[in-house]
Image (tube, rainbow, N blue to C red; front, side):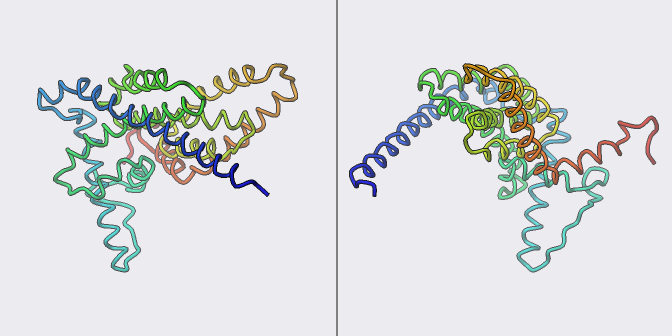
Length: 287
């Protein structure tokens, strides 16, 4: 039977740890807000939004507006007792399957803000979604640093560098969905750490499933990073590695990797089918 004093000490210690991490988040929020203001100040001065005049204007913006309205109308139908869903819309683009669009909304949860936003404010919510994605990038890196027991100062600096890196600023504003893999990667690395340390595996599996559901293209890049990371960290953690242990790590990694990939099949399988049926993969124009 545990002593009461020991139990109180453990709870107090846990509370202090949580309090310290909350101070990390508060510091990060303040630094991120100030940095974001100066980084994106030219947009404010010029009166510009984050909607790029090419893909943003003709693809991402209308998809967000249409997706938000479609899901709102579907929820209303469900609440009224009608559970049917149109799977093909002739007023979506030149007429196409809406399932990939719905999946893209749910596998990038920040986009669901468009569901509760009137369509006339889509431009504003588009800008908010981009900013939230930038915030999540640094926050996820901060969580990774916290897990790796790094000090607060260097973790905050690293989070800001990662959040406002050249790739994030150049590609992220033009293609907001390119930001999502950036905040998923640190969580995948935490999952890899837990996999190597024989801890709970669900972090790795769920993060990988989310990555694959969001984008199989970026999951391929995540996989390259994971292989390199696990290889380096394994030899860093293991002082005397053996061939048998290496095979066990490969087996565990492969098993949970396939599990995560399989869990996301509902999202990427239809996309792969559409890709191979696309005119881009054929020598003739489909009629």
